[in-house]
Length: 189
Image 1 (cartoon, one colour):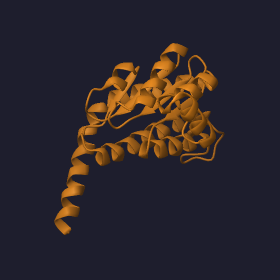
Image 2 (cartoon, helix red, strand yellow):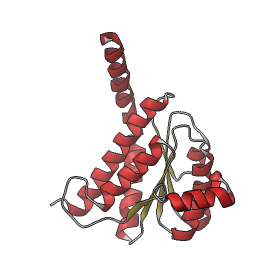
Image 3 (cartoon, rainbow, N blue to C red):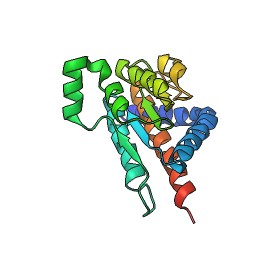
Image 4 (cartoon, rainbow, N blue to C red):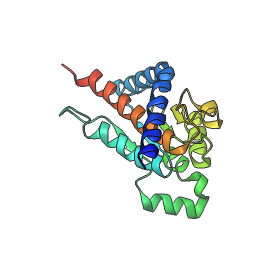
């Protein structure tokens, strides 16, 4: 068992070292979010499964607090309203559960922070397409495969792995890093 643990941690460590190559895209993403918030726009998160949980977590970091006691920053996740998700899924299909909500609440120059480990989740792709139609910036967060989400994104952050678990580890770290940068920009003294 010790070898399994050591091998896993070594792989995760290597992935995080490789993630440094995405530093410019992480910085661009943070700047897009800062600009939107400065202009009274909001940050809207979406994703499936673990990415849905990350969406909720990161929206809470901005709306609540990351490290500092401070005013809230306008953020929300499209993954939290089970009534909307199930009604839209039933009436329009699961592919529309995020895009339909975005159409109702999204405004030009908001930011969609769309997470998909594969970069090919149909409902996340549909949300990105709707965002483009509405003039909403798209930050796509995926794995190392260049996928449709990357092509639809204004900025794409590609975690350097093909393994879902390792991609997800990097996704939450990327999101936490961006939340910290954004919070510090507005509130660090």
